[in-house]
Image 1 (cartoon, rainbow, N blue to C red):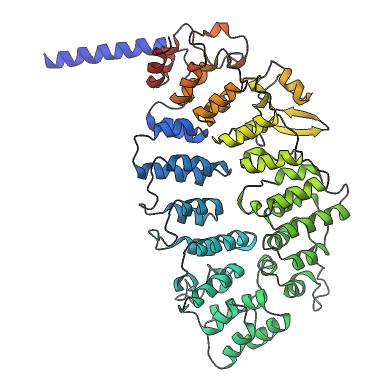
Image 2 (image 1 turned 90 degrees about the horizontal axis):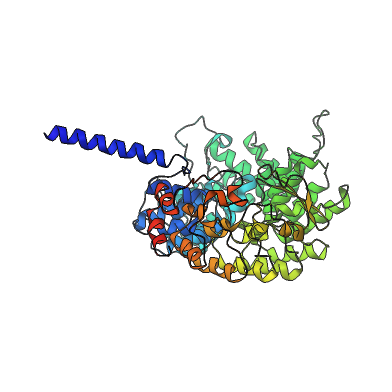
Length: 595
């Protein structure tokens, strides 16, 4: 009898399941069906309002992991604001084999490390490999990326991080086959400025480095003392000699570099990008830029796409004399234009101005306004002297319309508008992307047309190519065939009723107070706004319902908007059934209050 009952129950359950699946055949199948899937979906699409609701019942440890996932996977400055929202719910950052701050330091992510420090993370915490954030900052500061490690190391030290002797040790001292260019001293061989700074902090703190004195002097740039130590009979390993040779190239004169090579009987040629970053114009010129007097077939250095990393290193470390030297060897190749300017915006103000003046004088057509696309004012070291750079661009006649506001804080947005940046159709997309009320308010205050919510549903830079022709904007976006290749002014875009509705940008990225704010300032709720509510937080759906969202909408009543493409097919099912089929019983329950 028990077996019969079980079979009967199983049969009935299967029948119900088949029946329901048939009923919901025409319903959309979202990319999530359980809570974990919803969380991953919310993370993928930057839906922080919904994510915070989903994380309410999670442990502080779990919430910390998701906060870290945001700062680790995203690159936009808004990731810090998003992570901070989760942190306000209560997190535990340090209870893990790989602490959040150490992982961020490994990526040389200055903003993320600062964020975790501000949240109370221990700057000296060690991970399961027994490494600290400062170790990772030193290890990964190399060549073009040394500036990131250098400034990050300074931040950590200022926040209480302590250098320790093991940071400077030869990891391959038991392997005589290793040489300095093949892995020995891998933490410090390509990061001269960072190593010099940290070794100085270590010694000033009264600690011993464990390095031979000759090596220690070389890293500190005291080449004469280093050579005297060697001449006094204090022998060092071959790997140590290779490291000394590198550092003589970084910080010594050409005469000192050659004297050491004569003493050793050979030399290790230091990487050009590191020499440039260390500011040694004399050695860089002799070893890499000039023709070799002993080789008739050698050619003079040409600054081109393959060698522009040397210029980038000098810009990042603000080595102006080296920049001037390199630009005197220029051979302009437009292939490296974007890469150089991307790094120029991240460097100091003086180097930025120097490169601009060079471009104006030596490149056909001068500085192209489109290059401003590379300027992300609040990302990493670009925030250094950002207002000076913005002022410089405006003084040169550029209105900075190319700057994507998705990469800007509210202060930067307001400053750009005050300087004269025009309102662009995609401004609200950037401003509303990461839940920051102040950014949205800045664009509303500038006069964005909220009556037509589609007027700001324009994204940059991945899936839309934007070109500017005076006050017109050309959109080329394959997904919107009705936009095509036409030219539109901002007013024309707002007057067109053929664009998909952009309300979802607010509902997925903003919190209820901001959503209510834009509704109060003219944002119209389209008739089908609840059809996308399966991806919204319950709090934002309540705002829509409070403001008269249509709960009786049917698919065949929607002439445009999301239904035009037929991507959502509800048939004759109620909105409540629709939410239940999409694994959102919370919305189905909420709907009862307004039916």
